Image (cartoon, rainbow, N blue to C red; front, side, top):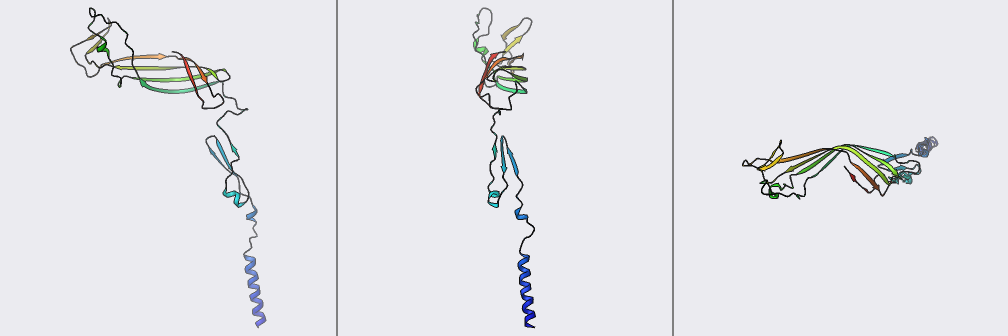
Length: 204
């Protein structure tokens, strides 16, 4: 009887030890690659051991430059650009007292209120020389609003005249609006980068 009990106990211990062994082989399967894209940078987690899984490796970093195979386009277009600014002028007019009662003091602007709004329908940049020199042009509306400190100024048409009246208005404004076609030479100092540094100069 004791021999039978001893044999049963031995079989139980052996069965328990075999049950703790993982025979599925899952621990030998390498993990799949994970890819994360952040802007122009790509991070790939390399498959490997458990220690390597804890440390993601950077396999490839793509800088924001045009690669040798990927050439920048010779013609780029930007749509619907909005400019905000201030309007002002340098008054060099001669005001003879015998003809008009308006003088430079009457034509002073409210500098903080006089504003400029430009709405460009499109702007295009055409490559001229290795993307370092470009022709830049477009089409848009320039809206200039001039507000005057003297709120008694009166503007009349037919004939066109500016005078100082007796009525004080809540607001005196002169609007000058233009349909504008700018033509500029653009100089790009970093033509191999998507976002470089440069300047443009020309006429409208």
